[in-house]
Length: 109
Length: 118
Image (tube, rainbow over all chains, first blue to last red):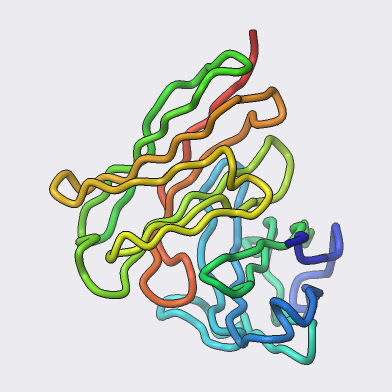
């Protein structure tokens, strides 16, 4: 069970859109639509942003959206804002009630 | 509302056993489908899933750490305990517990930093 692969960093200007990829294998991301995404500001606990690959919890801005194709899930942030600057982690169900997180992506605005 | 809080030692020596407690409120770990998980994060590094315990006492562990981890629950006290044996400096991390009712971790504790050093 290896960590899912994410780009180390992604940057964008205010108002732009960015996409963060999360690549796993046919044993995790590719087998289940059970990918979640978390935002983490420095010194804070992670916050759920997307679940089941495409669903957004209540209270999360609709500027955040998720998708999945094959072994890769993606998080898109549109209309980038300064407050979006944070670390982002994907997480996938990996079978038999186990989970695996991604390597994390630092978003710079 | 759902809250979770981790507690335990801030400093442990190499080879010692770490015991962390997650005390929660706002939900019951006897409710069908509910689970509590532990996730850790070394300083400046990524999150790593460690273990999960479900309402029915089903327990799951990270394959890479399975031999060192034990997770238990005390439903009457609203607590989940994680023990990790044979601690190493590489285990220095912030340890989080989190609520899970569906397929994701929706509520997290504030985390507790554990340093492993002699």
